[in-house]
Amino acid sequence: MKINSLESGQSTRTRSLQLRRFLNYLTNYSVIMLLFLLISCSEINTTNTTTIYKYWSGTDPVSDIELLQGQYWQSAHWTGEYVMYLKFKSTGQWWDTFLKKEHLLIDKTNWTLPADAPSWFIPPKNVIRFGNVDVDGFDQGSRYFRDPLTQVCYIYEIQL
Image (cartoon, rainbow, N blue to C red):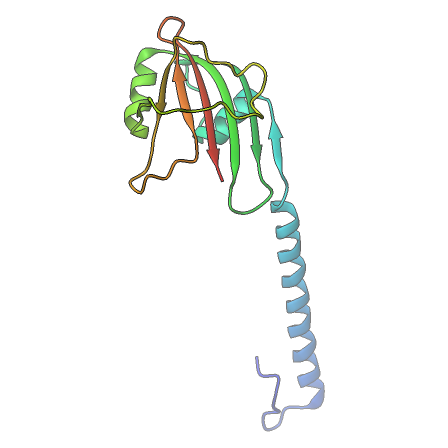
């Protein structure tokens, strides 16, 4: 669309119509972008275990899992920062597959439960704690717990 110069035989009226169309296009585009930014910038806070599982795994809960309790927060930013606490019961097969897929190893480091953990998120003394430190030694603090007697799992996952 040529706006800056009149082509031979082009009237001022034609140029005015082109300019008006261009400005309408810019206005519509700006409104759409503004709406997108406003809608996509809403914080997520939920304790619905099914919803939390979906946010976390990207799928519906499988039959190998019985969801018990959860808490999930996601920032309003496009960066996808979140903190999740999830308590569930799983089969041994599901847990073993999960450990392999996520490359989780038994964690024997000193680790402290975050101060903002929900009151129900208290892994028993006999749980086995797992973690994953990346190649550079970076660790945000996510931990995965499983009680071998009750098969109850506790997941604390943080992405900041």
